[in-house]
Length: 267
Image 1 (cartoon, one colour):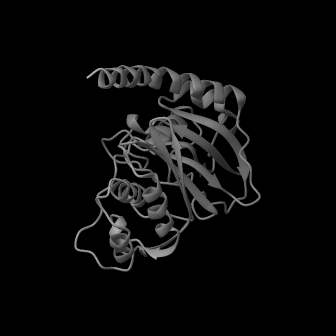
Image 2: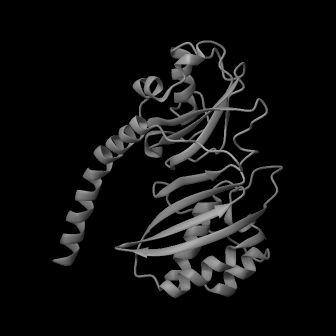
């Protein structure tokens, strides 16, 4: 029996998703708790797999992991796991086919980036976003790994203006390392007039001497993963726990941002 779990986490509390020796990571925290309560003995024996290896500082409200319980599968429940986890929450638990792989079975992933408005020209932001849609070589907008194809498809980029910031939503089948954050920074440069549309077109065609640097990771959230014909119903008590945890963390940040806004207005 293979189990899949939808998880959410505050990325600022972890050194990325993928387990690493001597660093606290999302994957490492999950494996620690599963071993602690006697569900698995090792990630190798349980065939532990994840959908998306988010970078350090990047959060998620919809990432997926799967594994085969070696013992006590009855303990794989949100209320049990969330009692032991910190900065990380299990939102749902589902039985899945034996050959389920959370990364390979995903039809698309959607990221949201909360981009503070620096006085952007909204029209330029939107025009720049359109350039990235479709199939392109994203070498100029990623930190490349050996053996990975730099050609990717961006299914769509939405740019929504809100009070004091822009919500940038990017959907694609798969993404390269830092690709989303570098695309966002390109939008930012275009919106500020520091980068022209022809520059972006040229970079997508391979004409560049310098790459676009990545935007900061903290405003980036893995928002949704789409699996054809599969649902991950959210446990209500787990959702309440996530809401409480995130409110406690970010209400203080919101009050400080409000203070900063008032301070700027009175200068």
